[in-house]
Amino acid sequence: QVQLQGSGPGLVKPSETLSLSCSVSGGSIRDSYFWGWVRQSPGKGLEWIADVFHSGSIRYNPSLRSRVTLFIDSSRGHFSLNMTSVTAADTAMYYCVRVRGADFDSWDRGTLVTVSS
Amino acid sequence: QSVLTQPPSVSAAPGQKVTISCSGTRSNIGYNFVSWYQQVSGIAPKLLIYDNGKRPSGIPDRFSGSKSGTSATLAIYGLQTGDEATYYCAAMDSNLNAAVVFGGGTKLTVL
Image (tube, rainbow over all chains, first blue to last red; front, top):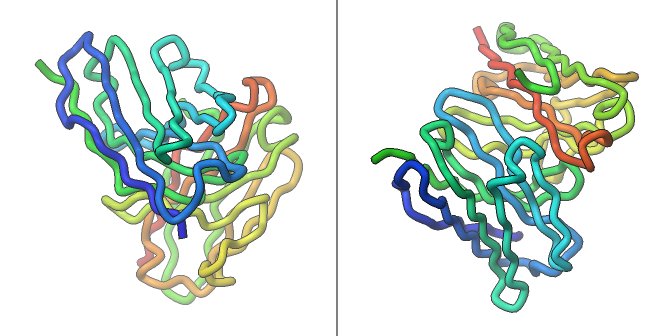
């Protein structure tokens, strides 16, 4: 059973870069899945951010693409998210996920990120 | 405004059946599979249904999914108090380079 564990700072200043990482265990990051991020603003619904295949192929949410970069390190079994120029609207719970198509079958517990000075 | 449209809330009594709708367009639900998620308050979502109507291992057959045209439906039979949660639908969108779109979520209250 694959397990995901996300990590990163809980507080980021406005205009700075949000950086999160996710470690994969119990399965191979080279399996035929994409690895990515979904966020949920307080009291709101789910928003898919982007995901990456071990080959480096990436899918983006068009509304976030200009600010998002994904990295994957297959040798170490982890992947990461950078989101630039954050504002208060980026305050959310960030989940790292395993996904195939629109099937998100594994989620971590989430990392709460607050954007505030 | 979510790309996929769900009712904000539904309710039903224990033991009853409830359905949750998810409406989209040809480019998302029409051309692609639909998945459904259950999110109990404060916990990460869980995959309930994938490929329109398939259940992952461990999901009881009280949960059923279907799709017709540009709409999908999640049905929950024999409601239990533990089913009280928010339910989301999702699909890829062929007009958005296979981006994933979610519904806005439906809060299920078990009366």
